[in-house]
Image: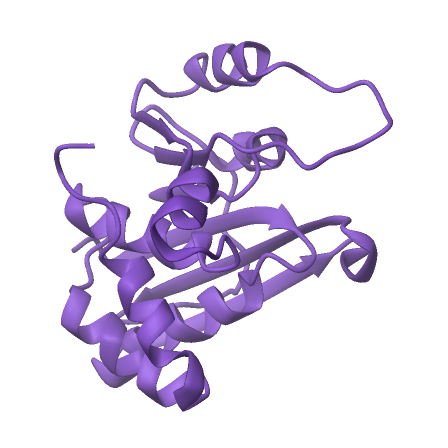
Length: 191
């Protein structure tokens, strides 16, 4: 693992970004690493933009991910991926949920978003995580956990599935453990 591992998670209010921040931070903390986090809310209660930042390593001095220094960017909504661009470099891995929040405003197409991201990095994985979670689990609220599982599967996140499961059991109410663990494992390498 690098000296400091930087994660940016973008999405909209209600997608569970704070839960993801809690779970990932707990794993790093349990490893004895220094962890700093920050969150930026738009109108999160109304489906507005939300971004969270997680940094962990031997010593972390600031909670904010420096520009062009994200190791991993998870975009739970494809247009929100654009909010992570300033943190991307050629080495950044982008994992994007091919899902668009219904809106009345004109929005960028998936191709436009992907083309913009390709200017920064070629390490892009896109998948209809919401659709897969809805189909396989009858619930798309856990899309972020599915994306974490995929990031681990692709070696884009230096944490283990077992560590994430432990953190789920520490940070999430017991009645949701099974659903979150299934979401963590819903994406198989063949998809």
